[in-house]
Length: 111
Image 1 (cartoon, one colour):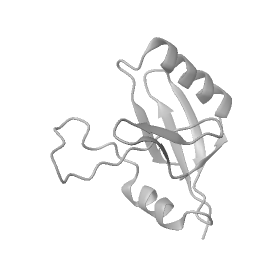
Image 2 (cartoon, rainbow, N blue to C red):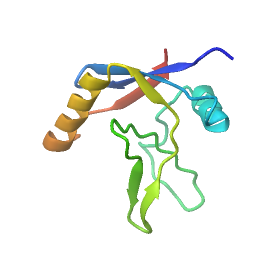
Image 3 (cartoon, rainbow, N blue to C red):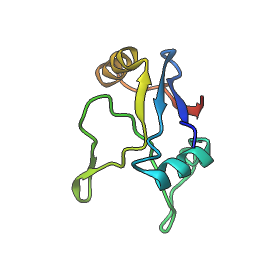
Image 4 (cartoon, rainbow, N blue to C red):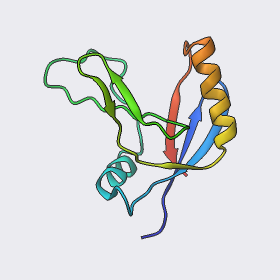
């Protein structure tokens, strides 16, 4: 299988990086992300019991732990590795944490 890549953007900040999907290490997850075309669906409607919720997160360091209010720290599934533009994205993510996420969107699309 040819390598697959996703373009990940902080839309408001105009920052983009490219991530390689590690099909050799996480084939089911990578195939699911690829087939979904990484749409950010469902964030504009109410989540009800029984609804499946999937978040795609971008970690720009080695740690992939997520803080879940119900159970504490949980590991995320690694579904990509940034191959191009990691420094600019890390800078943008740091700015996001410091100044807030209001008006920002994390966009995913096939590269």
